[in-house]
Amino acid sequence: MLKTAHYFDAVAESAPRTPDGACQLLVRGNRNFAKKNGVGPLSKSTRSKPQGFGLGGSDRSAGLQSPFAALLGCADARVPPEFVFSTGSNELFVVRVAGNVLGQECLGSMRYAVSHFSTTLKLLVVLAHTNCGAVTDAVDLYLEPGRYIKSATDYSVRSIEDQILVAVRAAALSLESLYGTRVAKQSAYCLRQEFRDRLPDLGVVYGVYDLASGHVRLPLSLPGQLTEEEKGLFVPPKDAAGFRQVALKICKGQLIRSLMTPARRRAS
Ligand SMILES: [Zn+2]
Image (cartoon, rainbow, N blue to C red; front, top):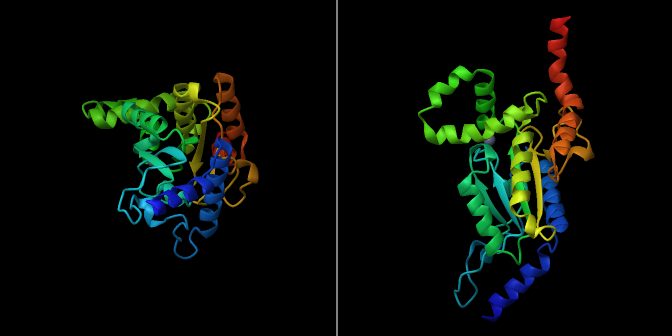
């Protein structure tokens, strides 16, 4: 019994105590991950202790869940959140669904985390990623509505596409949807609204995992020219004006402008 108590004391000491601390831990973890990305095998987190897997101490009691962040991410096989943020077991409560849309089941899981782990949970995270198949499908549907009829009878796929389409429609003029930023921002905004009575003790942030660089970021600069400003996790906008501001910032970035250049040349 004594050993188990010592273990939880140790976890409590190292676990972040504020939303800011939790966010910094994740951002640091992602930087380490990106640094090692593609260079040798990925190392396991030093925080992956046997007790973290739910294995108990000498009295064989099961360890308790004590995540410091709950994360909504895409089911994409290339984006495992624990790797992306270099976290150990029992540190992230992860909910994954294609396109990281905030449906009823996902919201229910986030609610479970917030109500059951209130002493350790400091942060809610929405993680989108580049080249997301679910988002690309929804964008294609928006551009070619005739295709919608093909998925009309497939309720399970359609329910995901319908939710992403809301973000695609809103982002149509800004091109943000290309990088999944809008979906992540929208889900984070909804989570913030859902748990507004828990703010500021509980933080809400979003980010986009860049498959090419390994960095969680905003899509502003060209590959290989990432600035410090665009790396990390971000607080979602509070209102429509805030959404427009981020959209404009992204559209003015080199990345989107580089995509627009060939079109301008063709037109001239
Ligand atoms: Zn995806």
